[in-house]
Image 1 (cartoon, rainbow, N blue to C red):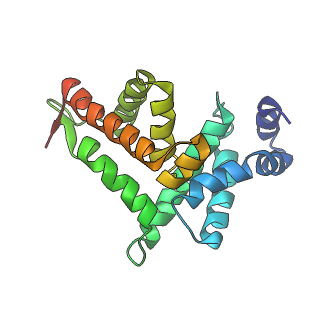
Image 2 (cartoon, rainbow, N blue to C red):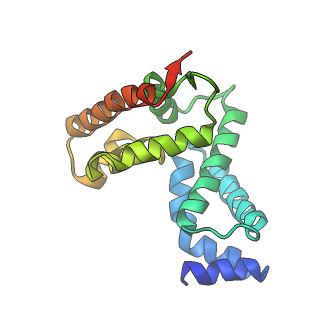
Length: 186
């Protein structure tokens, strides 16, 4: 079923919308969640919360890119769950991913006002659009989907050294770009 048809089912408040969403996007959303949470029951819980989030958001929301809309909800649900359980457990892949980015984006603020997360996200998206497509995709797989370096190597048929080098170079370019845009370390 096409995304537009599924979205129409949400507007009609048909429970079939959830069924069709689950059929088409469960694997993708599970992948996003699983890279943050490893426990199968936590992943299943977040999938259900993702579908509920979509149900509660549509209407009034009309997603332009339904898969991205669902992945954002899935990631936010997984991050909420991660915060809840993080006092007792640590998810090493997610922690490693965050620590790699800390040198670039942690504690940056505007010289006048603290930038909102949305503005920072928009700036990073604009920055990534200016990068080589291959570098952009590797960066997104690592820091949005939280894929491991090994998984990225397999997906794009690259060596570990090449992937790590790409990530390093993009992070190295990102920090001065943030500073030039007015972000300054606190």
